[in-house]
Amino acid sequence: MVYVGLDVHQRTSTLCILDDNGRHVKTATVKGPWPRLLVEVGKIKRPFSICFEATCGYGYLHDALGKMARRVVVAHPGQLRLIFRSKRKNDRVDAEKLAKLLFLDEVPPAYVPSVDVRQWRSLIEFRRRLVDRQTRCKNAIRSLLRSGGVQGPRGLWTRKGLAWLAELELHAAAGLQRRLLLAELAGFRGQVREVTKVLDAMGDRHPGVSVLRTIPGVGARTAETVVAYLDDPSRFTRTRQVGAYFGLVPSQDASAGVNRLGHITRQGPPTARKYLVEAAWQAIRRSPTVRAYYERIGRGRKDRRKTALVATAHYLLRCMYAMLSTGEVWREVA
Image: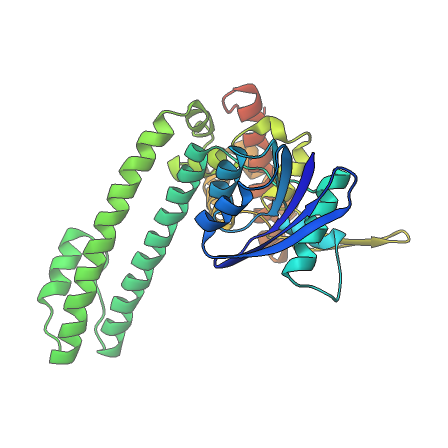
């Protein structure tokens, strides 16, 4: 068995090869895009195992290398830095470190979902970016109105409000901006509708989305995002791991009996955290169980509202994990 460590970049990649005794055999740099890299990897004597650090497009590389290698391990970049802290860092050194970790079977692995799940996640993130652009466009229109001393009506983004905005008399320069911004807004709205339609169809095919939507305040976007990023609930052995994966646990600095807790780690998918916090607000209003949890954490103090809200989002996530693991629907606690 040959062990290969691969330091991957967009235009150049470096590979280090160790024999079955862990001795260095070869280090080489491959110039060119990933298809060129795959050609060079295909020349390695088989059987071999290969390891590379998770990066943008790691799913494509994982699938392509899986057709050639006996074993492919994707290293978790965050945990990898904790193992190797060195002042001497370059591509050749990094490739050798990955090869040694692979030989020792000490690579901190990253979970690689299927192609369908990766595409589902990608479309969820794409929709969020479209909504963000739509929001920036709306803010630009509001800023344009304020600069002209114009007070917009309520329901500015309804059909009636947009018709009023289109007929509003403005300076020639402001009118040009208004026209272009309205065209941009219409384009984003159409794109969001199109992507939402596809996401709804994908969510309807997954039973987990329907289960999570039984939680008061949890809509289609939150449910599909949690299901897509959890993917296989069985890969988590404890509920605490789920909160850490989504970055909803506090940072910790504990030593010699002193335990300091700080802000949440914010690791993992930010889109999922955003949707979970939004769902928590709605669940607090609609569910007596969730409201009781929020009030218990908040203790009736204004300075604890944000802490209580994030804790409630974490609580909802734990409930979602349990529901996806068992298939049970939401039920209120008496």
